[in-house]
Length: 291
Ligand code: GLN
Image (tube, rainbow, N blue to C red; front, side, top):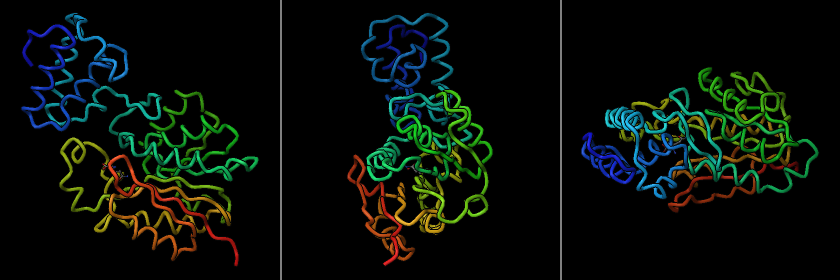
């Protein structure tokens, strides 16, 4: 980036042009994220400050950030923060960057009235990553009992830091155990999961800021993308109480396959919801009771 731009508007333009030249996806968004961090404001509020002049320290920090993003790092790892459901989460290479489509998963769970009518519903966040699903649910529905699992110790450490940041240290249990080792059968009222679901061949073609930087274990769902989803559904069938709820984030073409997997594992009422782009994204289902 040239050293001449000084105002927010000039830095945005020069930075986005530089990132575009380096083949970065969504260069404008990346610059907004970096500037938002430097100006302590939300990404889009950067545009209400176009005429603000950046001091030399911030310009230098911006140059360093732009260079890291140009070299392929995701902007959210450079800033160390991501917004999810209006709250800030610490974000680094220990876990997948929280994504807007996962907000739909949380919204589906929050909208499940019969779940929250129970006195102390037990809710499991399977594969919690940075912790944002469990934390969002626990903040919105403090009467629940929450458990968050991840096989990655790094991700769990980050999730714990995020839960402390949101004042939930003692509210969410974190564990790296497998569901089957940890939970009694029929002990949970709901399970929410954003498992890895990208087919390996698609993972290989993801933009480099995702493929080369975010944890592969959080993205790659095996040859069909369904390997981990299938095992989550099998675990859920054992762990949920009859009538319990499963909320799953899935890949954009997996609605039919996941509906079939759910039916063959004893779930009923499977519903596939679309994301903002019109793709299959969230599936909800109930573990069928007897008869
Ligand atoms: N939505 C993510 C992506 O496309 C995938 C998340 C996941 O596999 N759980 O990068």
